[in-house]
Image 1 (cartoon, helix red, strand yellow):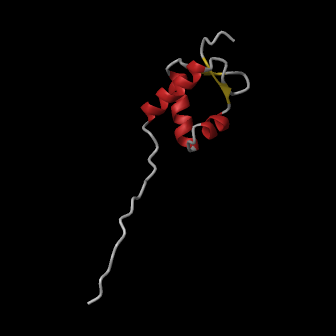
Image 2: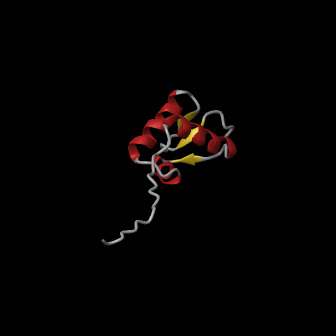
Image 3: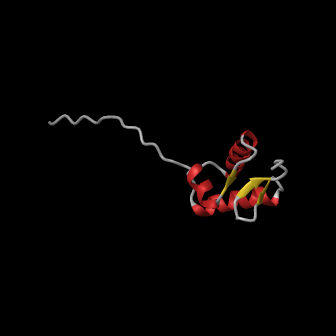
Length: 82
C-alpha cells in the first residue's frame, strides 16, 4: 500500500471591492489631495480597476456632485478651490 501525502495549500482569489468601498476609497484620495485631476485611464491604473468598474464609480461620484469633469475630461473634486 502506498502512502500519499498531500500538502495543504492556500488559494487566494482576488475579488474587487464593492462599488461602495471603491467610492469611499476614491473620495478619500480626493479629500487628501484636493487638486487631484485624473483622466479615466489614470484613475483606472491608480486604483487597479477595469474600465467598466472605473467608469461606473467615477460616474456615480460625478452624479453625486462630489466630482466633476474639467474641460480636458479629467475628474476633479467639485469645489476644490482650484
